[in-house]
Amino acid sequence: MQRSVTPLDCTPHPLELARQLTLYEHDLFKRVRALDLVHKVKSGEAATVASVSAMIRHFNAMTSFVAACVLQETDRERRVALVQKMIALGHRCYTLGNLNGAMEVVAGLGLTPVRRLTETWAGVDPAARKAFTGLERLMSAERNFHRYRALLRKLRPPMVPYFGLYLRDLTMTLHSNQDTLRCGMLNTGKLRDLSVLLEDMEARQQGSYPLIVLPNVRAMLQGLAPVDEDVLFERSYAVQPPSHLRKASSTSFFGFRLTGDSDSNSSNSLRGRRASRHRTLSTNVK
Image (cartoon, rainbow, N blue to C red; front, side, top):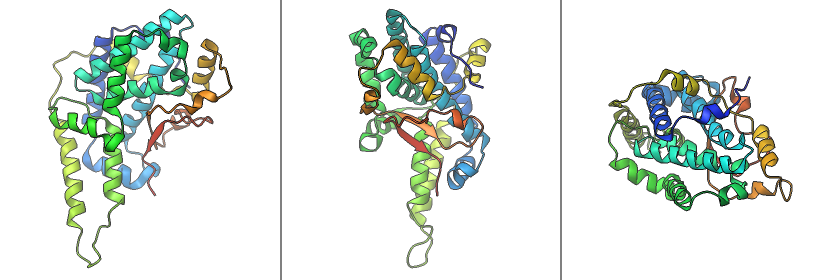
């Protein structure tokens, strides 16, 4: 059963919500062992790896939470305020080194049901729009995430990297190169690349944030579940009726969802019947 998003869910101050989100995601990230990640990518959807699945489920849930927080508000001015609040949340995550949280905000506000609300976005403060554009550029996949990777090289723990990129990079490393060379020798280059990737993840799992967990906010985050895409579209059309049916799905915005988890919530992830133009990372490896 999906958990409904109420206005109360969106009330924590962006700074405190960012702190609590960062603490929670850092805990989830630190539980992922290198061998767990390799097993998940090698086995695809057939494998259930608790630590990896937890990260994937949370990413999907948090992304739809960001969208649903905006869409549940029928008053335009309050909806504008919620968009600005979500942008502030993403920026606060960025300043805390939680790039996974920053991506969740970028992806959530970039979902078609939110992105199509031109009347709402028109009311967003220019400074907030500029901040969001900056986050979009930072997390863009352009040139293999070159801006994100450049920032990542400068950051030191504690931090929460964008987890989806580890899945993507590991998939490329494991499945784009043969284990042995044509001469029959072991492909040491592949092993070296794999070692570098996994050691990088383990290094970024070190450290801890000097912050205190707020039980009520932690419980809220743990209780989040993905909201069906049909529900998001219904809410979107309710607050701003479409001028042309489904025309909004032609948006060129770049966003992300993590998919490929085979748990019971997978049918509720933001896949749906409507083919939104949001890039999807999948752990379904042949």
